[in-house]
Length: 256
Length: 262
Image (cartoon, rainbow over all chains, first blue to last red; front, side, top):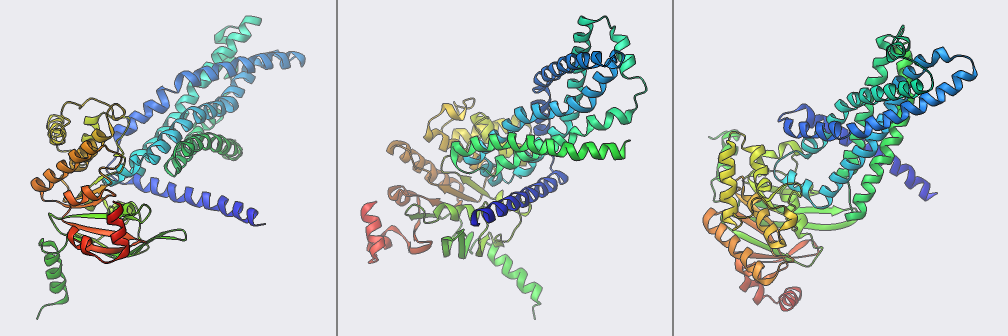
């Protein structure tokens, strides 16, 4: 019974501390001085350096969807639906979530481990002792970089997925790229594509926030650093998928 | 007849005129969970004075420094820096007061992704934005020359020895020209020669800069060398405070044992 109580207390304590952390980051973000140089460094770290991985993942997903769609649609005699199936599956569903999960793995682990290592070696205390707000310098910059870069990386993943998906199909049956794009995007509206792409800004918030939170509250040497990196990826990915449930429903209601 | 405002202003001026202690800690308490670390500690340090805080491991010496610079919050009690009460200040209100302090961490706490020069430049980049990059580079060279590391500007912290790391940490702590220097175990883990060099460096800085300093140490020899006064802590409180001779003459059993074993 005691262990259940401890578990429940720990659960609420974790969320309480996460809320306090978010509030401190928001306050630090809203007040000057702004850490532009560190923000630009983080935009490069999160965005440019994740691009090859995200593009590769998007490309692989494009091929997988193409193969599956070709097989399934052929069985039901609906091969003409291939372009629209591929476009909608990649752009609305797989592109955003794959980008989120890849970034959570690469960036979440990186931020979690980096900040945890800084915490256990007192580097974060040294920043604070130098009268510099660590929530602004370390937290706000990384979280903002994740929020800004996730939608852009999603667009890159979508583009790679569509390109390789079309290519995989074109190897089996003749289909020009122009024909594929024209049919795939026929009758498409901004509402169909923009909200699923820009919902990844929320993924960015989740990935950055959880990784910074886990890193900056680490205790316990090398083991603590390892735990922070693991928790950043596991919790970041889990909350990202849970948030997707809410976001998909929200998008369906608000942007029908 | 003076008004309450005039009296308060006058008192504030008296506190700031240099005759009052630069740091005054009064009845300070701090516990972590059920463990009481500081149990009503009272200490003061004047301008140009160095206080060495001695004691066994886990008696709250480092916690005292962390409370003074605001890295921990006290449970109760008062911390006055230059006449300003800081015990209840929020993180964003601590900025100005922290700029008056320099902190040397026990393990130097250098930023491991930055070079030696970048570590020292770090506080200047954030707080002396009016400085041109060439002036800043010059100031960094000056500070590193002061600690004898002017040839190691481009080295990474992982490429230098523990003693050198502490010197870089000291140069970084001095970058904003603090009025109060807090040193956490400056000679811990160093060989006797490196310890002696760090002690000499601290003495030189005190002579040249007339800062108030609080040094937390286990090293009695180092404490005797660099401090004007010593305070011995046990179970979260000051057992005895005074010059080394006062400690040496003390009849308190704990003091006698501590000096005998040090």
